[in-house]
Length: 107
Image: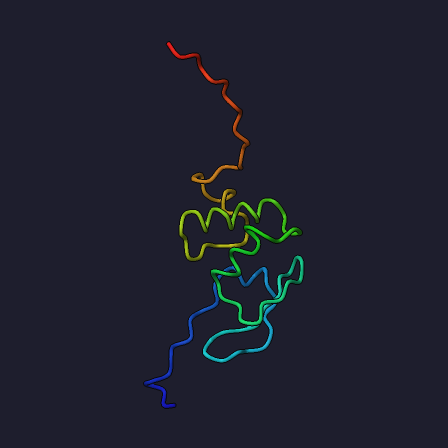
């Protein structure tokens, strides 16, 4: 393949800070394992990696679970990952369980 036809390699996304990069699978893809629970991904893709700490990792700290949930819900591609998102932006607040409101009588 000549260089003009080769797919440009994208820079790694911030989620890789939480995953151990394994062997290259070619075409800019890698194997990866979660740094918290060691779940293995044979072809780790950033959207899959972001979903793991947000939804299924049982060992990820709560603030990072919220961080990745915020990224997914707001359809963000990549954000700084040195500290949880809600710690650096005022747009995200810690999750609070809603109180149940008693049904109002019909008038």
